[in-house]
Image (tube, rainbow, N blue to C red; front, top):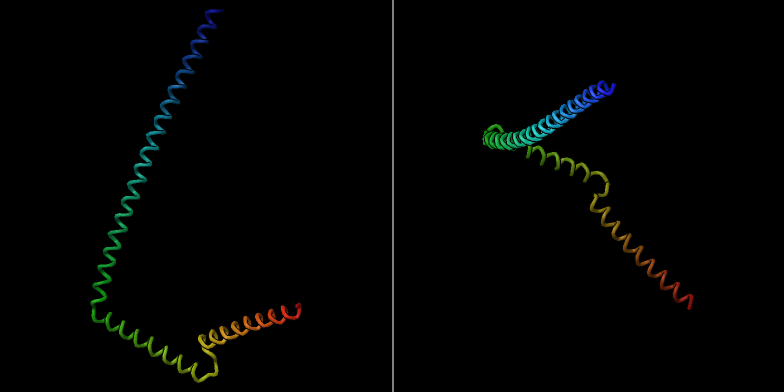
Amino acid sequence: MAKQASVVQDGVEQVREAVRRVDQGFRRIQKQVETRRRRLAKEVTTRRHLIEKRAQRELGRIQKQLQKQPIVKRAEALRADATERIEGAVSSFFDVLPIATKSDVERVDRKVSALGRKLKEMEKGQGGSAEA
């Protein structure tokens, strides 16, 4: 009976040792996979940055080439002219209407604030002499 227990005990130890080896092997493989994943992530990030830089340079080059084209220069001139005309039309439209401009409103607001401060100072002065 002791011999059977010893055989069973040996079998259990062999199974435990096999499980430990499998576990160690699995952990080793996990570390390798994690190392490869990090390396790959770093490589992907580096390549993405390189591609972005290359694309930005190419885009800048294409933009410069387009700006040299006569039709683009003409379109830019037309846009500037249209902007100037629209601003002039809006300005003349608002000049006809009796509407205060932003600068007028700001100027009046500053004057009202200054008058409010002076009034408070005067009230303090009268309040102080009334108490005396």
